[in-house]
Length: 182
Ligand SMILES: [Zn+2]
Ligand SMILES: [Zn+2]
Image (tube, rainbow, N blue to C red):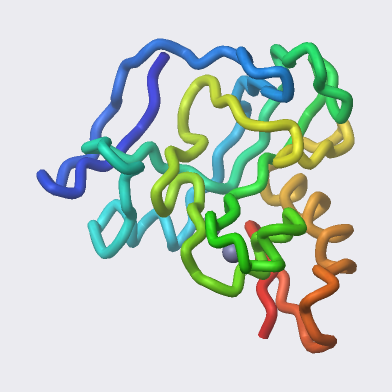
């Protein structure tokens, strides 16, 4: 399958051809990517201002605002079914045991800053034909969702209304890809 990736060490942006991933884990979900938004963050990544490949990898597949169709699920997946439309979350938890936010799967409130973000930092993004991730990172959206922006906004609403128990009351700013305490 084809994906679009930056090679920071060579200041290069190119198509990468590699085998499509499969949903091999019990909670894996494979998505056929339908749309991937391109925003100012992508522009800066492609200008090599930032963007960090996964450990041991020379390139970073870009793309973090996306809409995908479920095409394959692991045997224990319960949240989505093949044919569903989903917006995958961008941020992945840090590995610091004391981070209460990540411990509650609320990594958008991560206290350490050591999180990964697909398509931005330490994890490949969604500008690929097929991506695979754990079902807990999938936000199902209505089948009438026809654009990445619409679907991403829809998926962010319920998450913006709740926060980890460890986070004090305060203002919450919502963006297209994440929620952040301010
Ligand atoms: Zn963006
Ligand atoms: Zn964390």
